[in-house]
Length: 221
Image (cartoon, rainbow, N blue to C red; front, side):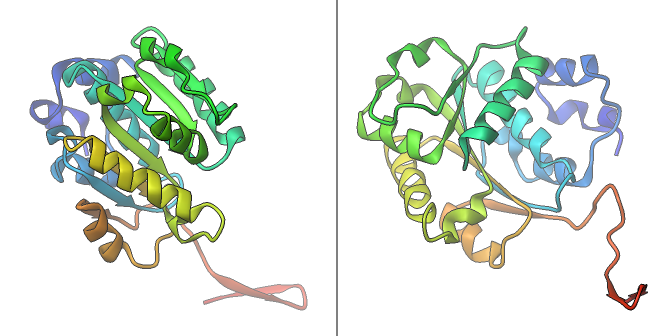
């Protein structure tokens, strides 16, 4: 759908950034997220296929938190390598608009220097440590984005992820929570637990076909 048709629903400064980046159209996951209350600070659980545009939904939430709500954004990923990747991507795209930091190292540190930054990219283990240290700048966080939120079901990472979401909702009652995933078996139940609007869509940029390979041939089903 054309970006221009959503101009009235997108804060002016956020819309300007999108135009500067050359966006002319929005993907279904993005338009559905906007309609579901992305810019009204509503919690969202976005369950759409890989490469369907979930990351831009997160970016829009971040821009809204920094420009409109005048607060900080925290982006949680499951691995330090992913944190480094997101940090490089965000610095390339938004360095002239906001201060971006990464915090995924020593989990026994409050990292008070992060108070100077608008966007903090981190892991669930590091955010758990920051919460336990009662890091003072956490009170300024307006949006928490949890990438790969389906890892709540993971035996090793799930408990920590559940704790940080629970604690964040408790200490920041006005926090906007955005969960992203391509693979959730029970999205409705998870959305209810998060008190979030559920955004589901099956659109993907490349068609996905299923088939069986046998004796040098593929039979598509």
